[in-house]
Figure (cartoon, rainbow, N blue to C red):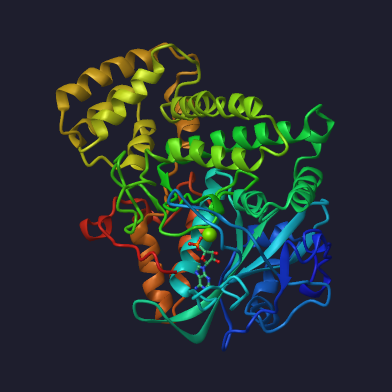
Length: 487
Ligand code: AMP
Ligand code: MG
């Protein structure tokens, strides 16, 4: 275990120089205080969880203090936003403080979001509000607990600093961690500004730091692109299988590492709805739940364009072609597991598709359906779940197929079935209304609910004593919350 002043820095990205990022100091927020910290994220830095309680913790992550070895930098990038290229992006309110390496030899970027203005702030104030910082904190740690690749969150620091959004709010800072903060948009920036030398420097950096195994391949850049395609196919399969809607899949919000990145108006589905749009400014539904799959591929093709100086168009096209089949294979595998199936049969895809068709428009709670399906033997479970469906005859026909399918499984005692289903079907999900309740209390200065919710969501598969209310369906008001896109 290390104390806060014992972190070891190795700022590899900063060393790339001024073409890639700009030195900027954090602007402190007033009266910084700990809102919530993640002991699991602290462990990645070998930090003792107790360290979060010390005043210096809030000072460090509230922008008041800095390690001597930190080198805070705002990164430059661009990207496609809602399908249009925006040449002028970059860290407008976040700073890469430095890279810490832990006892296991892993590097973790420390990125302070809400750290004040930078050369890339455009009209923005460089701040993040408490509300959006809490949402990103809860989502990153909850996704991680579900086994979905994501950036991590170390802590949220609250303050008295006023910021103006639709109304006056308070500024906060979020300390985000990831092995890299390099986005698809980094590659696009150097491609569209026609700086081949720097683009090569970026590519070599990413290969050496994050894809060293690709350097062994005859075509390292192609191997890296293939890996990015594979990781994104798997990531998006997990989003779709678990009902996670990202909301702003712009290419500047896509991590080169294939992890969930830059949380805005995200949501987990309550009732299943393939057409769900969590981002209220997304009028066309470009980033609706079911569109995440084709948009994932679209984003990869934007990255492919930026990689044309390194890789032939034919090879890029062929590799992009792997995305959909890989996605489908991962998705079907996950959905089989959610249904308690351990073997594969040809008709399984139809079984999944038919179930989702029946759920659509029925108001069936997506997460609880799978959890309840494993609670009891298949026969009893489907009989109980039937009432949730509008088309009961349709559901009966599905249930007959499902029961027959379950009967053909090997490890089929109810105990085995429940154990394997409950291990993949969470009881607790970060529902928008749960986050909102925690935010409302935090805005009044009471952080206990954020901390409790974080603790519950860090073990989403385990039933926790006294926490039944977190596993319930949302109340009617909680299903139709408008989550502000301003953050
Ligand atoms: P986002 O929608 O959070 O992914 O941000 C898109 C771009 O806007 C990024 O370049 C951000 O750094 C920038 N940005 C968002 N909010 C602010 C803000 N309050 N101040 C300055 N820049 C911001
Ligand atoms: Mg962003």
